[in-house]
Length: 184
Image (cartoon, rainbow, N blue to C red; front, side, top):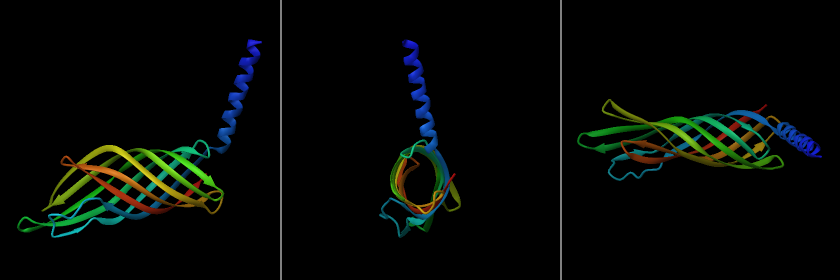
């Protein structure tokens, strides 16, 4: 009797594993959009904290609703001028890698998703030819929506937030991007 229960439990577990494997799917993609350093311009003569950002990503959906995603993210460059004197231009850029857990709610060809994870971002500031940089890991998150054109090709619009740190100062950088993904 006990052997039958163990055998039945093993068969149910194996069937469940095969069922999930039937939905498992990998994907790769790229996105481009606008990044924005979330700082105020107090104390600057000029500032431009928006730039073009992009990312390359890949992931694996274990089920139709849950998966993981890894990405390389370049958040572009922010610029400001300060009157020291003389007037000094400061460039700030950041890039790095992120790893997320993802949750997806598919609705026919549409889907909405959220992701939470960790990003290791390198922040670098350059002024008067001198650069300082620091790489720091912190939480990152994002939300978005997607549309599947075919079984393999989809588009996605998403908003993500990353935290960077330089000289003890933490700043948030947002990325609003539009991208395409290929599922295999």
